[in-house]
Length: 184
Image (tube, rainbow, N blue to C red; front, top):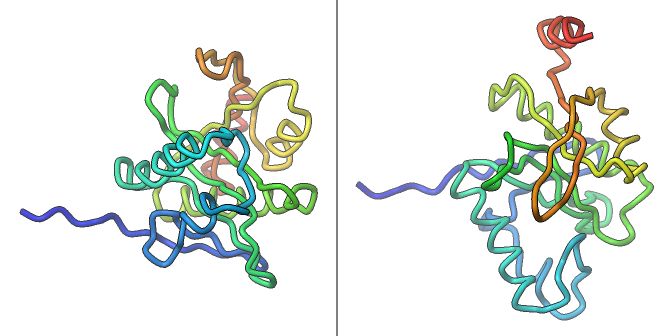
């Protein structure tokens, strides 16, 4: 039996195109590893460590069948960052996470792309919910998960990240609203 590569979906909003960094039509090396590429959040300054980070993001798609999307602004072609589901070893469950590149912050790109990914997860992948893990001191991310309609649930500690607040996302369907109301 010959293993087949997972399908790498492209999802879109009016102004953004989200594509898997593992997809053959996306050049992750040019986007993240070439001299002059804009560094992504948490990127280690060591070029070898950056390569491992990108390989992990691409490998996640192959291991899990989902992962971060590269967020491309349609009007400019600018790579704005990474947004998508993430479920590394040691995480309590799949997480919606985001990392914007310098220059993309404060324009609603993270919220717009996160909403698009949530719709994809709930409608196309059939997920009942997912979480976002947010540093409670990160006011911008807290405001974003609140705009997305997520509910705070408790705390999660990981030796690499420290204490993070768990925020739960539900589908924007009648069943999702009923489940959310039941938690109130």
